[in-house]
View 1 (cartoon, rainbow, N blue to C red):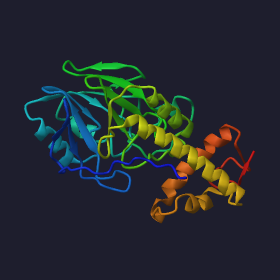
View 2: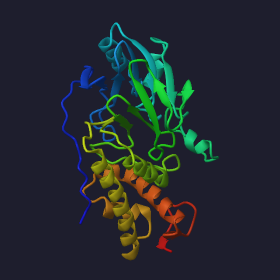
View 3: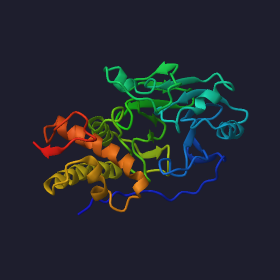
View 4: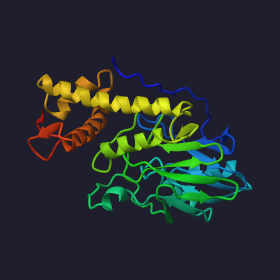
Length: 300
């Protein structure tokens, strides 16, 4: 029986309008809908008076204008970046000219891999370098709010979730979303790290998740448990493909992602590649070459 993920996709919103979504939390959604961003990037604003902004979004002047219009009379003191994909961090470039906020993040794009000697291809926001680099467990105090940094690599190597301590609200970026699973694309994406980061969330006491895309996840542990089961099911599908004589990732994808539009196959292939890498590392699969996207795969 296929894993049932309790997707959350229903939401009401208006582009460019800031709305209160939880005590001490406001949100405004950028008009950048796509197959990867759902309705668009949700930028969160924490506190009142002196506020933090989480994920200022794409390089979109209209979205940045909406943020400042919605908090007129208040001051942005902190900008928290979950990760450096182009729909999350580039908006900070536009914010800098309008405020003196300090930016926070794990590091520049790919820093979780580059720091370990792994070369990461361009494709993210290569301009963003945080003023303050955060580590797992760090606390950022904003006066009328405080945030705990939760390092969750996997979707990207520099991905960080942030928990608003007042209310145990976790802003999960792209690590856990309600509307879809996350793409894990090597070399910056890493399935082993992603699975470990999901397990980390199961040990926490967060009351609700607010992803950067989509509505709130109100039963977080049930959702994460389903995500873990889903990834394990994908591994079983890969092994079944091998048993049926399908040994190449590009030929596995149509069998594994039935019902998925073909234009999404390249993204799906990246997640299959990430799963294959993890399975080879554990000795479950073997490959006839280092270039796994073209390799012939077999059980070990």
